[in-house]
Every structure is written in structure tokens, then in C-alpha cells.
Length: 410
Image 1 (cartoon, helix red, strand yellow):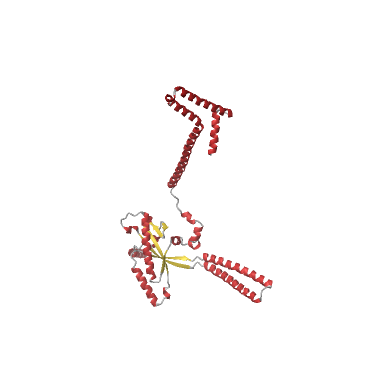
Image 2 (cartoon, rainbow, N blue to C red):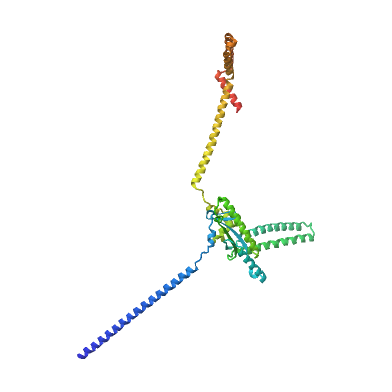
């Protein structure tokens, strides 16, 4: 019994020792893993700080070319930006194959380019634009030309058959015409083969072309304090940019690089391709303009400006109509007064004659004056009776006379 108790005690002691050892091992593993985690976090922080420093070190203030592409309008071969605070003119350069040149030619090009760089006194940017070659216009030109050649060939073939069937031509003449017919046939087949090859090339989207541009800006603030209006500033900007671009073109000629200033239409195409990289491959600028897509981007005038213009137009029309109406009324009033005076001319003469006699009664005598006035009244009565005999009252006769004169006047 005692032996059994001792055995149990020894087993319990062994088990307790094992448990204590396991606990110690777990504690050690926990602290070791915690230490490794802290070291790893420190390493990550150090690497993150290093990357941030590298990013800050790589940051620079060179203005991207996209800023040159923000524009308000294109006018006078210039891109107007920032509401007239910046003007841009673009030079298109023709590239050269530098690798195929000899050593002397390469040195000449390099010296010319150094001279070009030394002449620059203002900021410029070099812009490279990659375009997909659009062969559609060339294919259409080939088709039109081949169609014309084919029509000529058919006419020549009909002419040859008529000559051959007529029997009026010698063998030499027929051979000469047949030779020309063969040439026309070969030319037709050659043209069709060119169209087929060109169409096959147009299906390949990898047919690319690179265009090189030099962008030259001008800021009106370079003029300093001035009293110029907007139009004068634009004219000065054009003159300055044109002078700068011509100077650059002359220096580029020293390194055998040709250049030209882009026109307004070419600037629009440049901007269209820059803003529509995907669409321009399948829908070029010329096709977009023919379809009237530019109307979608036109800005409508302000509604108040439209109402103001409509109101001004209405006022002008009504004022014109009223002026015409009043002029006609004034002319009608004068015409009425004239007609009235013409209709009453005999009565007016009689009244004026009576007035003259009355004013001179003292000189001619009262009795003579009364007889003269009585005679005037008798003549007036006879005239009125005579008009009554012709038909109608005096008023009717006057009205008829008035209408007859009005018709004659009209």
C-alpha cells in the first residue's frame, strides 16, 4: 500500500514538472514571436519612410504638355488659353533619319541642334503625337481613278471590235489599236491591285505615323503695364509668336529639320487627335465635321442676351411701322386740305372778293359796293343752280369731284 502511494506521488511530481516545463516553453515562444513582429514592423516603417523620401526626391516642377492643350478657342493660327492670358503657336517638324547618316552629316546635325538650343530665350515644349495612318481618302482617290481608267478601257475595247468587224482597216492599224488596248487593260488591272493592297494595309492598325511638334507659348503679361485692349493684345501676341516661330524654323534648318507653322484648321486637327485618341482611328476629323458633330459642342448664347436682341428688334420694327403710319397720316391730312380747297375754290374766291369790296367801300361808294356784292351772290346762285341741274345737291357734286380727283391722284 505504501509502495503504491509513493508511486502515485512520483508520477504526480513528474506530471507537474512536465506541465511547468511546457508553460515555460510557451512563454518563451510568445516573447520570441512578439520580438520578431516588432522588428518586422520597424523594418516596414523604415522602408516606407525611405520610399516617401525617394518619391519626394523625384518630384519636380516641370509643367506637363497637357497644360498646353487646355484651350478656349483657336483663332489666327493660335490656341487661346485662360481667357486670353496665354497664346500658343505650334510648329510641325519633319523628322530625319539620323541613323542612316554618315559621321560628317551626324556632326553637322548635332552642331545645328546645339545652335537651335542656344537661340532659345523663352520656354518651349516638344510634343510627339502618334497617329494611325488613315488610308480611306487614298483608297477613294484610287477607286475614282481606276473607275475612269476602266471606262476608257471599255470604250477602247468597243472601238477595237468595231474596227475589226468593219474590215476597213489594215493589220498594222489594228495591231496599233490592240497594243493601246492591252496597255489600258494592264493599267486597269494594276490599279485594282493597288486598291486591294491598300485596303489590306488599312486593316492593319499597326500602321502608325509619328508627328513632331514644338509648342511656343506667349503671355501678355510680358508686355508689363499697358493700356492695350483685347484685340491689340491678340495682334501683338500673334506678331511675337510668329517672329519666334520663324526664328526657330530658321535654326532648325541648320540641322536639316524642316518646319512650318500650323494653320487654324491644322491646330484643330491636332487638338482633335489629342482629345480623341481612340475615336480618331475610326472616325477622323474630316468625317466628324461632315457629319456636323461640331454642332454638339457649340455654346448657345445667353438667354437674356437673346431676349434683349429680340426686344430690340421688335422695338425697331414697331418704330419703323409707326413712323410710316404717321408719315402717311400727315400726307393724307395735307391731301385732304388740298382737296377741300380745290373743291371750294369758287366759294373762296367769292368770299375773298366780297371782303376786298367791303374793305374798299369808302373809296368806291356804298351803293356800288352793295351792287357788286349782290352780283357776286347772283353768280354764286347761278353756279349752284347749274350744278343742281346736272344732278345731285351741291354736297353730292363736291363728293363726286373729290372722288374723281382722288382716283386720278392714285
